[in-house]
Picture 1 (cartoon, one colour):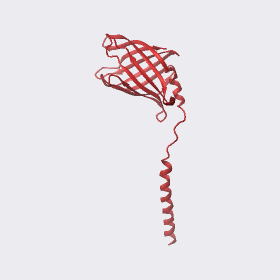
Picture 2 (spheres, rainbow, N blue to C red):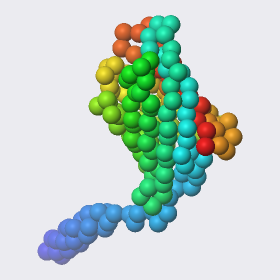
Picture 3 (cartoon, rainbow, N blue to C red):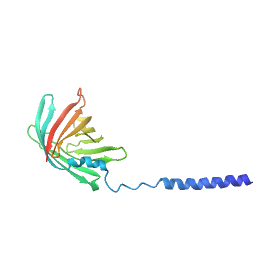
Picture 4 (cartoon, helix red, strand yellow):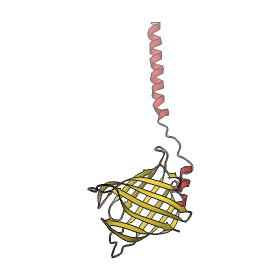
Length: 186
């Protein structure tokens, strides 16, 4: 009888503890009170930029392009939002506007990015951050050219200048190609 009572009391104790444990485990952590220090690396991209460069329209055909870029802190500085607007010309009729957001994502320990384009396309991607003066984004893109992977490389040329280049392996192409390269200045 004493053994049975001991087992019953032990069972009740474990049952009570088991009921408390999920309640304790389900408490969400407090959100961060300030943006991650990693976002400091994106500060140089803030502001209004004027960009000029070239776009590849197919084998052996490049055209000059012009664009503007506007980047600002959003959502308390946890993210930056950007608007990139290419100028449509007779030689470059497929100019697009892209809006998006990027910033540090603590769980994956990477910068993350989401972008939406006026042509109906979108891109998502990640970057490990700056290595020296270069930041490379690995992108998954879906737009009028199909679904493909790309790299978008930013290279600092000073506090008021950077170059960005988009290279992609388009569906049916033998290898990666540069879609555009532009220099942006404040």
